[in-house]
Figure 1 (cartoon, rainbow, N blue to C red):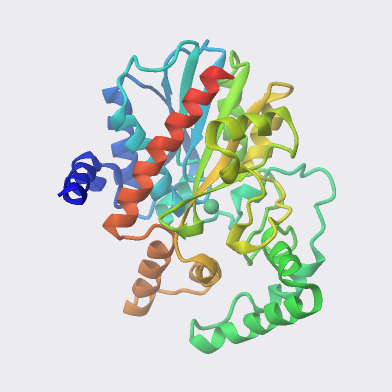
Figure 2 (tube, rainbow, N blue to C red):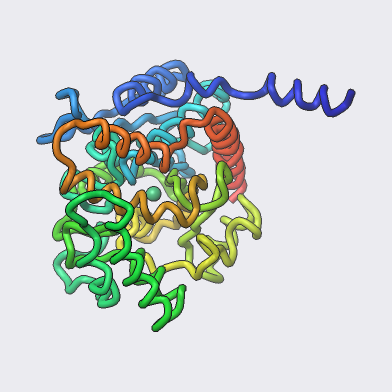
Amino acid sequence: MWPFILWLEALMNTLDYTCVFGVDYQDARTKFLDSADRVAGRITTYRHPDETGPSGEELAIDVARLGSADAPRQLVIISGTHGLEGLSGSASQVAWLHTIAADALPPDTSVLLVHALNPWGFAHGSRTTENNVDLNRNFVDHSERYPENTGFSEFAPHMLPQDWTPQAFDQLNRAIADYCEAHGADAQFDALTRGQYDHPQAINFGGSKREWSNLTLEAIAREHLGAAQKIGFIDWHTGIGEWGESFFLCFNSDGSPEQDQAVKWWGEARILGQRPLGLQRPNYQGLVFSGLSAFLGERPMVGAVVEFGTRGREMRRALQLDIWLKFRARGDSPKIRMLREDMHDAFVPVSSSWRERTSAQAVTITDEALKGLSNW
Ligand SMILES: [Zn+2]
């Protein structure tokens, strides 16, 4: 009897995922704005000046403020840094909005939800921006020499096959295997993933200038976080970790007081010594985390990229598919449609159980951050 009752209880507490997930950018945006409005969130919209969605719809970063803009403690929660992962990030924000009352925030604490940081990628179903820039590698100093990544040039020539066939991966797979054999799996993962600034038609390209989303995040920090003295940070992502489970990438430096805070909020097991895909964490360059930290100056920020796992190491193929669809796909054949569906499902699985599990975890992780922030 007990297991049945527990199962029933779990079912009754499950959020209706169809109310928190959007089917596309426009639907997600509407759900976000409606949910924020229901708890008296105040919206500021930053319209994209040049780009529109696939149906000509407006693209924007929407910011919702809950609580007082003068609060000394503020939690910033971002979705859609990697465009299409925003379907999950948006649902994480909306799920949390569904669970709170308008006046339920801890004292002196306020929340700033940033919806669709990369709205072009969100609307067009790509990880990257309108310039094929990985926004999470774009926050470097573009007036300086770019961080070097010579290893990536071993992979770049094989990144973009003419046609998308099983044989087309062979060359890239061989280059990756050769690199692994020569330098080890950790070094290979680092070279492929840390970010590169030389190959604009390949994955993890950090760009050649600050993207509109990068400039807009600075404006958001200036206009909304002026009073914040202590800042919490969550940037929702997908693709790393076990299927449907959260995986944390905390970028506070090892041994820092901010890292200690992150451990208090979310636990040692999730914060310390994380190994994405079982490998050493790459030396990521140009992260949103670093960008926002710089915009805040001396004020301390504690937080993490929080991923929800999907296909594990199989994701490499989806990353390559993103580039192929952008630069090689022509027209709207059944094959192209099938590949686009696969791409979406790789980053935000259609599965109801994945969506229920991840939105429930998102609520808990957000509440833990809020509690931690108010005790900091
Ligand atoms: Zn991501």
